[in-house]
Image (cartoon, rainbow, N blue to C red; front, side):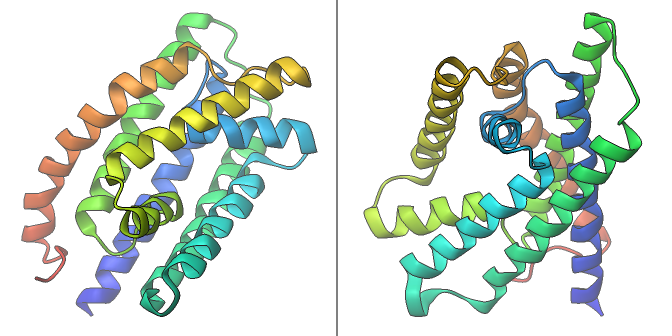
Length: 215
């Protein structure tokens, strides 16, 4: 029963993350490096952003399986339904709920973006503290870190840098809309500190509700 409660909580948090991500995309003021690459590839292919995210995230799970071999744990396969749920929520909210919504004022778009980043930071921080399953990208970075000895945080930063380079190259070479903007910088400044703050806030709540990971 305890594990069921943990996974239900994780599912709710993933849905909240997807809602926040959809609002950040709708604000159209720039998004985080990983989301910016997904959005750019979506613009190129005509595929929905959430669907593109599903494909790339599931590819990250496949990468983990190749790198880890027998050390790949069955629990890591949960990253696949996590990726699917996240992508479906992003698609539904962005294209159905917010499809006809327009944020005409730049100030409103910026406010929506900041609010979305706050929600995402809170949800992701809680998911990390819950420790039921990792996101696919982070799981791949952990697998590469174990294989190469490169520090996880450095690898994660390199991935963001690589995504920004890809977005800029595609934007100028193929004339796709530029998805790396001021919102990307705002996200880089906000996300880490806010996530750390919400992780601390989530810990006593999870302890009280008996949702914390076992030792």
